Length: 110
Image (cartoon, rainbow, N blue to C red):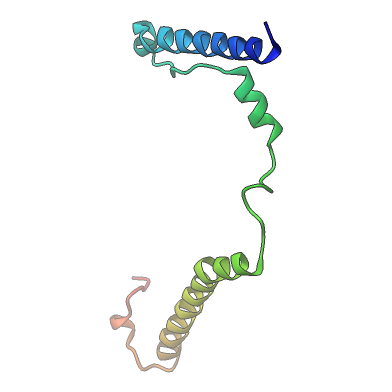
């Protein structure tokens, strides 16, 4: 038997073992009664995921991604904060100059 055929047979045996383990765990009624999560632990997949622990393959910082982040996160938050500050300062100015009576204020100590 050649090496590629032997590798194919090993892979097929591994797939069959995983399939049987998956079927055994998914059809076990005791798992559902105890509330355990049902899943099959694959050592090969765990090794593959542990090998790729950094995010470099999934995210590459560029000026385009920087601009997208600024436009969708930073600028709206800063803009909303400035809007709130301007509205509050305007109300505070009206209160301090006496243009709004104390009884007409929204938040007051009684």
